[in-house]
Image 1 (cartoon, rainbow, N blue to C red):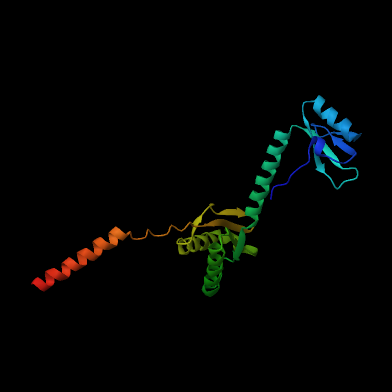
Image 2 (cartoon, rainbow, N blue to C red):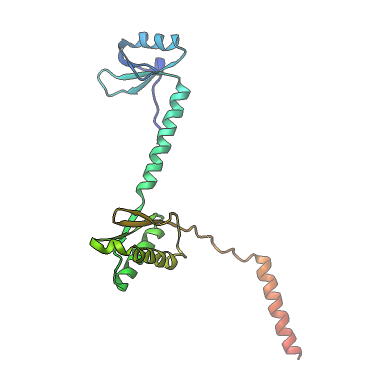
Length: 198
């Protein structure tokens, strides 16, 4: 949702706490005085916190301010997407039945469009058998290859070995065109006719 900011003469508060283009506070000023100061600097006065007492306004070039806000929104969306990553943990000596259940869970997350961090958790001296973890991750990737792609190589952090899986974009199979269908029907009819002739 886009946020709209009051600028210059559209600001109605009689008194404002003004922040300069260098992010430093200038102080509390009358609205008209703040607008005049902004114009002297070839910039705009933008109301950034109308609920504060007194409201806070910033002296800045409006186009630059708008660009900065757009960048913040993009960063926020990016963080939101990263938050959609789910994690599934397994142990290096997990039972086959439990392993299959974890794979089902991974598939459910992938089907919903989530990325999945698949983690092998080692306890105690299990860390000496890192190869078991590598084999498990490879086995999981092989079994889930139809539904996902492996985004990262196995990474070991402390006693956790993990990879990231991303949903595979499904490409719908091309539908048969009417001309292809009619050609197929014609071929079938011709074949039947040839059989009857014999």
